[in-house]
Image 1 (tube, rainbow, N blue to C red):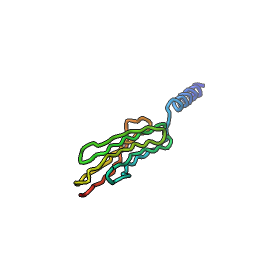
Image 2: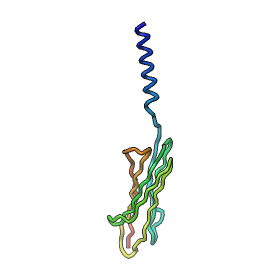
Image 3: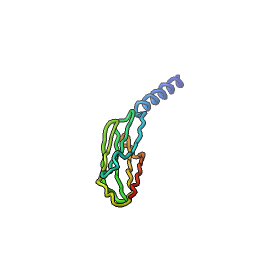
Image 4: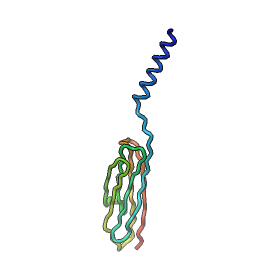
Length: 120
């Protein structure tokens, strides 16, 4: 009788624990890319998710170590942050887009980057 009682208690605790701990099976990825490389340099960073409740994308456009533009976006399964700036074509410049990607408000994140060098 005692062993049956302990089995019922153990099974009850297991069931309660299974329902108390939410399990999220999700995945997400992030990409950064240039879309315009003329007198206006621009691009984006996007985050796409599967099984996510929310995703975010933060994008920064850098030129020769100086922040030129930044943007961020949020959505349930897609977020795209667009950046761009007028370009000085009279000298060589080193451009980069840096993206930060998160899913479900997590502290952890993924990064992406794209690089372009304009030679005068």
